[in-house]
Amino acid sequence: MGTVLERLLAGEEPEEAMTRTPPRKKRHSPYSQCRGVSWDKTKPYRWNARLVADRRTLYIGSFETELEAARAYDRAAIPYPKKPNFLPSFSRA
Image (cartoon, rainbow, N blue to C red; front, side, top):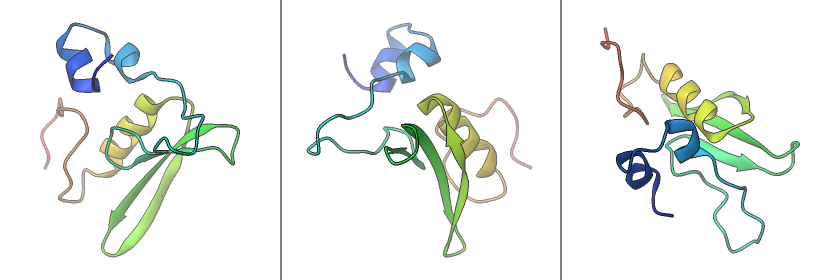
């Protein structure tokens, strides 16, 4: 199986590489492999995106897939000096 980066380098599409089943046992980490994304089992099993900036936690939203949440994090992190999850296809102004 491998990490997301290994699967992307192997030629999988981003949606396929990011899609995974949610953790089912307590010993599994509820966190994503992407920065700012975590699994929330209290809502109808969705991925949450949050950004910590200026000592505040900014709730970005709840998403169906880990990929959607990671991309929303990337869009919200543009004004802040944060590393993106994916290489940007635009310039940071």
